[in-house]
Image 1 (tube, rainbow, N blue to C red):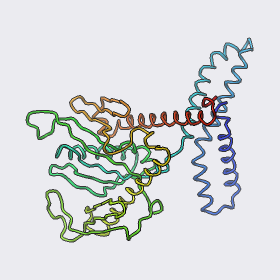
Image 2 (image 1 turned 120 degrees about the vertical axis):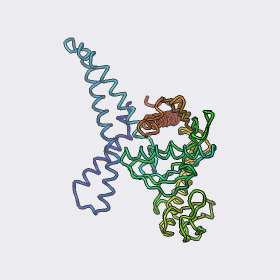
Image 3 (image 1 turned 135 degrees about the vertical axis):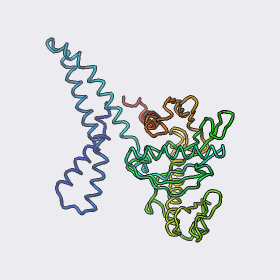
Image 4 (image 1 turned 45 degrees about the vertical axis):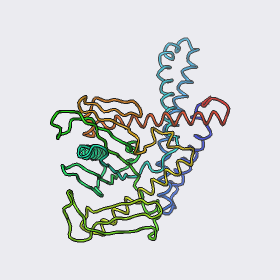
Length: 368
């Protein structure tokens, strides 16, 4: 039996019609209407695909009947391959839509980029990576706000933290977490030798106060004078803020703003995101190590990608994808090619896992 006629799809279609009837009848409070509107928006893509699949299946059945009609058989044989291909495409799309959603996918992102091994060259590469994400965000209409930055002597970044806000930002960027490696001749290299250096990227879902509660008594807050690259004081007041979350030992420092209040607000937003991500990871581990079933672990110690300047190539090691589009990737233009491939691989793995689970539960091959 096709997934289009499964009990699960029947329940979804019935619920969708129930929601539409309730919204059309009126008399709902603003909050109730908003809640139903959100559920309607979540179900609509699944419903549209399921209805299209049922129509495609009916078309295939009708064409197969015509094979016995001498006058229509040739036409039916000609149209059947395309109709069956459409059924297969819609079934795959529906299975993907039914995969469990990551609750954080629609959230904005706290992006953290840090220079790794390689000294000044690593800091310059960290700046290149950050500009890549800035350009990518701009192309998608997302907003970027720098939360905290520590510059190096030559204009790179020892560390930069930014908020990226836009629908689906986390869903697109979450596989960027890990170690990014660069191979190129540094500006300071007189002999023209290729050096290898690295930067780490962490992508955290932006958390609101309703997502994670932080008890004030669990915080130690220190204030001090902000300083710039080379140790020069950029402020004569104690405006910089360091917040330590005592239960976890997480430390966040913000000194970009001249206002202590603004630095504290930014530091709290970063801390909230880190705690939220920590809780997400804990829950995922409890749910049969879900993260390990995805593409890599997203762990910052994992080398995920290499940017080779002499060869003009970018290689993502998790999916063995190589693009000879280094400039376009760093400009943010071709980054989608890598992200789309990572998402497709993740979906394929989760579909395979779902099929195995269904087979184990029913004792029959999935979809049989």
